[in-house]
Amino acid sequence: MSAAASTVSTAPSSPRQYPMFDDLHIASGATTPERRLSLGDLPPSPLPSGKHRIAVIGSGSWGTALAKIAAENAARHADMFEPTVNMWVREKQVNGKKLTEVINKTHTNQRYLPDVSLPANLIAVPRLPDVVRNATLIVFVTPHQFLPTVISDLKRAGAIHPQARAVSAIKGVEVEGSEIKTFASVIERDLSIPCSALSGANIALEVALEQFCETTIGCPSAADSALWHAVFDAHSFRVTCVEDVNGVSLGGALKNVVALAAGFVDGLRLGGNTKAAILRIGLKEMTEFCLEFFEGAQRNTFSNESAGVADLITTCYGGRNRKCAEEFVKSGASFDDIERRLLNGQKLQGTATAEEVHAFLKAHGRVAAYPLFERVYQIAFNGMPPAQLVKGL
Ligand SMILES: NC(=O)C1=CN([C@@H]2O[C@H](COP(=O)(O)OP(=O)(O)OC[C@H]3O[C@@H](n4cnc5c(N)ncnc54)[C@H](O)[C@@H]3O)[C@@H](O)[C@H]2O)C=CC1
Ligand SMILES: O=C(CO)COP(=O)(O)O
Image (cartoon, rainbow, N blue to C red; front, side, top):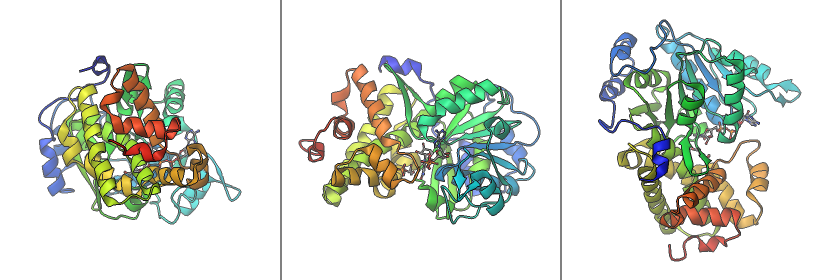
């Protein structure tokens, strides 16, 4: 294991899945909240008593889809949650009106998730400190490049409940020199609250339209697992909780690099066999990267869970990273141009992650061990011809 392993938070190595989750999954809604909360390990700081207040930081397509589910569940589990869920919306003008006002009046996010009805108990709030005031469960779901500013604004406002729990649904990593961190561990480090990680095969619009899918939540304790399961599990959004916070986080971050490779394949008009090979090699590199650099990460998270293989598949066929990488090959334009032109204000995550993973592997002298990640980086940033993606891979 490299030196970086000691800098990342570690997850317990066994058992892999929280035993009580299977009960919850089968009998969702039938288990009383009290019983859920009494199960499992004691978290590092006691959970606040009384009902939980949920806050969602981020209102892009994924933030809005997750906030919709959380608000519906808050209303459903009225004995466990305060009825109102606040969602932080960075103020924008939409047709001459404030986005927060449009969301609160029409119950749709016309900027990032139009045509999807949102519950009336989901409230758009423009000021971060107001969003998290008295919140005990905080969902972080901004594009990853904006998290540092969000965290410093929250710290400056001193607004975080000291016993709050967080979950990160952000896909990316933080690299500084030879150190790598998941965003769950960044949030834990910077805000001193336990942080879980939610990731899975979850294209936001499909989730918001309630098309059946699964997700994985990696949690640092069974108590956190029970809480986050209650916040997110729904008839069309089935939640599996595991202990492997790092594996869940890394699955979501690294599949975006492989999705760029899948988009290059499509841009080159190569067929299904080539894309399948890219997915196989990509999954292998994702798994090995995580096992090499993150203590306690588990192979099963990649091979068995939605956060691993399933997310890789959906993103390599239907995601924004794939779409923009195809256009990169076809148009020869830069990713910045393509993002501006195709994504209508949404943010690509894979390109920054490819750069960060390259810098980290270089710092450890391990670039050659991850040839697919490296070629994606070289094609995206150093002028390597896209056709080189598969030459001698
Ligand atoms: N969209 C999807 O299907 C899925 C996205 N994710 C992940 O969720 C995270 C958030 O993605 P999306 O909700 O899709 O966001 P997005 O890509 O739609 O970006 C729009 C969001 O970025 C915010 N934003 C723009 N400029 C900002 C700034 N300067 N400071 C702070 N915020 C700013 C906007 O207010 C809005 O909330 C990403 O890490 C993504 O990988 C995960 C699963 C599915
Ligand atoms: O993470 C996603 C689906 O799970 C979405 O991927 P994109 O960011 O490539 O659209």
